[in-house]
Length: 243
Image (tube, rainbow, N blue to C red; front, top):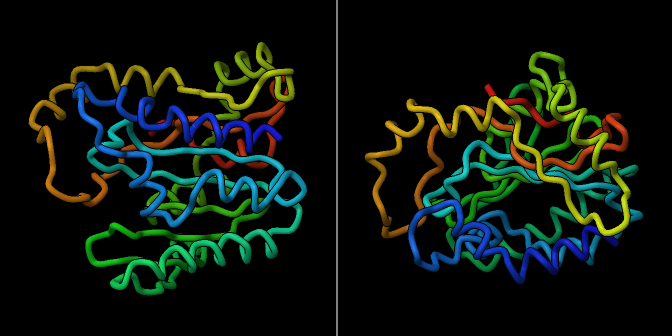
């Protein structure tokens, strides 16, 4: 099972990968903090769900500043969304009960209902929502808004990009040895390397005493599970392009 293999590899190298996003030689325990915030352990959810419950998994987000806080979303494609959502909420509820201040939340964003838990300091902050074909687990309602926009045709998905089609055709889904597919659009790379982004981040604090609120998001379109030979799976078709 690719998801289980990926979860084991991520557990082993996750902190190192996240630290590469910040030019600081410190161990901020970024990966464990996100797992705690979203009440979702990667290895646990992979073993709990299995390939018959979750057919594919994708990750998307707004920017690479994981140590200081950003918004991320995990998308699960499944044939039985109701059962998948119930299993995920069971784990989220169990994990959230370990934080006394975390309270249940319910609401609606862009016409999409969500449920989850949130603590005042956002050390626990998780929203679980269901769209057509996928269940979304995120730490920000902004991600639900962006994904709903793609689902309703108001924003393009990464599957519509020429560069995505090219690389997915070159590295087709299901190849032996593949555990994940990482995609950054040309627009995302240009934005992250451009002068506006660099100038805006020069004043960022080097360290923060506690888990901060997610910074205002400008775009999404980070890694996503894709499809074979340029054809999109439901998961991939929900991932927005860079704004």
